[in-house]
Amino acid sequence: METSHIDLAILNYAANNICLAADRGEASTFIYCFDSIATQIASLLEKLGFTTEIKEHNGYVIKSIEGTMVVLTIDFTIPQQSQITSYLPIEILTAIEAKKLADNNKGNAEIIESIEKEIQKGFKTQDVRFLTFNKEKVHLNAGFLDYLHSADVGPYLDDKTITFKIKKRY
Image (cartoon, rainbow, N blue to C red; front, side, top):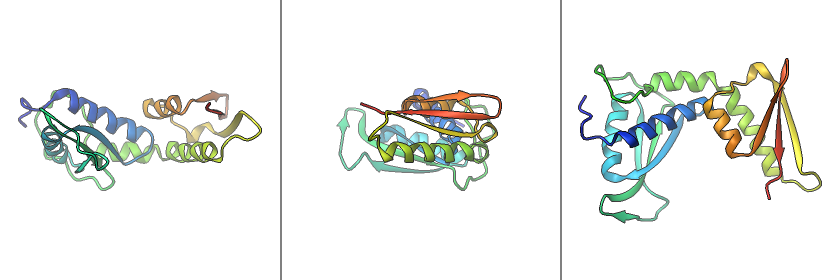
């Protein structure tokens, strides 16, 4: 596979997003990049078994010397067999590996959904809520911890359970 003309920083960013999404139990992700780079990255990802789609960024046209800003959607709901047999300079999951990882982390997806529902309810009288789950259901991996950090949710682990402290955001 010829990778000498591919932006390795964007490829690495896509690889990280794929892994983080799979850690959260999701089977798709996206990145923002310029159209010229998106077509190169999409071509490579499709050879790894992913389904890709390039769309305009929220209907806005952002142009620069490098091209137009687009959203590259990367889907591994129905992964295809990888067609790449040579070495890649970036460690990246194939679509089949990403799908397997996402399936193993379905518990994380369910917990994220529960946390999001609690956040959506709003906070009227109390500033904090707690959700408790069986710790066997949770995989405290990079993607899940990244979500907890961005949502400002604190995990507390004991012998058999994990409790999530959901704080009111001001």
